[in-house]
Length: 223
Image (cartoon, rainbow, N blue to C red; front, side, top):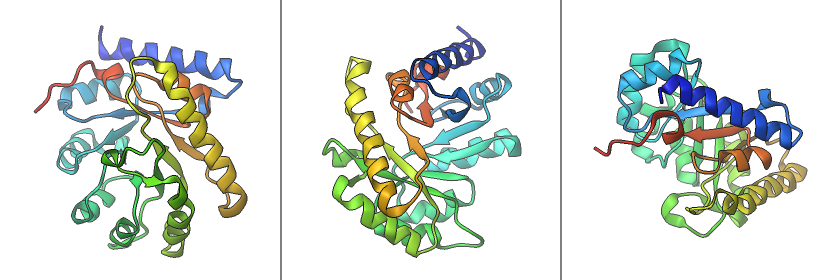
């Protein structure tokens, strides 16, 4: 199946999931995760109409963004080291993985306004994936905003499972956490949850940003 065919199938499934949950499909953004993909594959995805791409490696972000040009929007979706923050912030419009105060301080440094951020939440006690524990989310939001950052919402990576519906409770928890936090910290409109294995479930549970790699590009070639 071509990348264009995969993109079309994803759009159909997202629309179906949105309809099932009474949502407007226009509120859901597909983020095509470019990790380990050749430039040709990214150009095919852009040719199929995708405009938002995600990277989790700073070195590949530099190459991929330059190759696709200014007609695309880039997000950083992986764990970010402080010493890579300046390089990344100059090339993205959204950071999905703010997870500690030290990264706040690194992200605000540099010319101009820093791009907006999402706070990554460790819902399932999996610190190896990054993310702040649930109890630390509100203090981190307040810390980020005190430093002038625009916090747009939350991100999570559910535990791996062979059954897509297993992600439902984690997606629901993130949405419920967001809803509670909005009472104290204000609007958090974005929820980044859902990947290739479970994105339809995530859409049904309120995701606004779905991060898709293999569903669009096929199996990754590890390098």
